[in-house]
Image 1 (tube, rainbow, N blue to C red):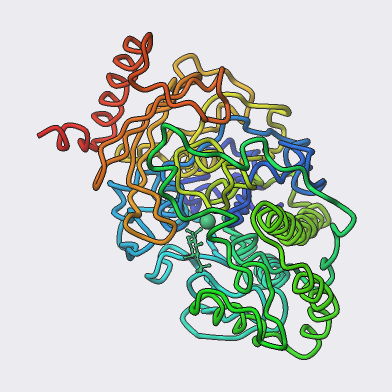
Image 2: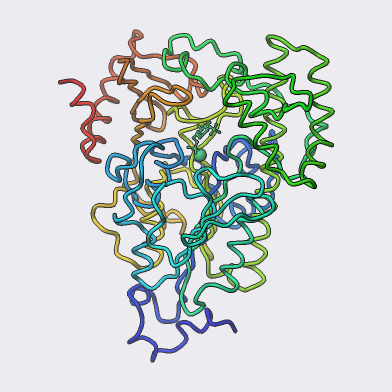
Length: 519
Ligand code: SGN
Ligand code: CA
């Protein structure tokens, strides 16, 4: 029996118990929390959601033995802000981290701090991306900024250390090492295992190079979207054809130095290649050199080039996902072998969704479905198995973890606990609409500032700042969001209703932007 199992074995231990245990039946063990999050992992590339591109048996296992949230969303579709929403359970305007250029105020209330106070051992490994050092963690070992795929630098509880190898494997090992040797086994744990993968520039592990060589991926229906009636969509800079860089993103750093792209990006691409060790370089060259040679011989233009880029993007991105899935499998196996799986809530999610060529794009940011949604699978021991269709948002995770631990949810947290849904209950008054607000503009990828409301069927978005444009979508008739119905005859009533709902949400969450803009 490990120490974890004897944690609450005797009533005599009661007097010394921290607060989480007082809310738990004496016979029940406190639940551990393993919160796995990837960076930019689209739901389209998890087979629990979509079988078109890849099979992800290990990630799917979490959903097969637990639940798959089929309507899971973020509050602000970009890394740092998304992470801040999750840590605090609050929308961006409340936690202060509205875009990636900010610095997280680590003195504020977060769920790891509250869990730690209640007696949990807390740890974060991998991508952090909040600029300030993590607070509320007994152990932290984080990548610097975005981190590197190969031989990355970490900050290990304040000390800079370079690790040889591939980021997804290293982050997994750090997590397993902490679980095995570094935590206090007397206490329940909350571990945030946050991968860099599959963030740009989608560098696969050497063992996954070529894994999809035999596959030609179908183009999304709206790959050649012309963005009619959608000004903000027409002005973005996240086009696979126009903005995806041959050297930086698609690894065409030729030895002859003949392929030249945007100076900064080309330099970045060559630098990433130069960071590989000789063994890694040999594997890399064996795979990419023939592709570079073939590419150079073809002199592709127009649609041919766009489609070549799309295929290369998909091949690299999906190869990166193979490693993520394998590593998730390794962690689940560890928990199982140690008898921890039956006493641990396992969550898998991403900091936001991602475009796999829909609208011709990569990246995220927009309130359109592919980036507003995020995958969410959760395995609660003895909990519900199946799909959960209620609309949930990443501000809900903090409340969920706190309720699970028996910690009182502070009144200023804006998200609601998903625990009833994980247990298979059907709360009567579940939310009927979601609020979204994106701020990172002017910035890379040029997605304008916008906020909006989404109901089960409709979405109303207001792009503001240097423009003043509204968009309305009927998601039932137009799931690809190609037809902006705002101002079209017959849509006045629904528009008025959605505007009212939007103001209601802005009042509820205390984000009075709409009324401020009107002044
Ligand atoms: C980097 C990327 C962008 C990406 C942002 C935000 N450019 O700046 O493509 O949108 O991160 O991503 S790169 O040249 O640095 O790769 S986030 O998920 O971390 O917010
Ligand atoms: Ca991200």
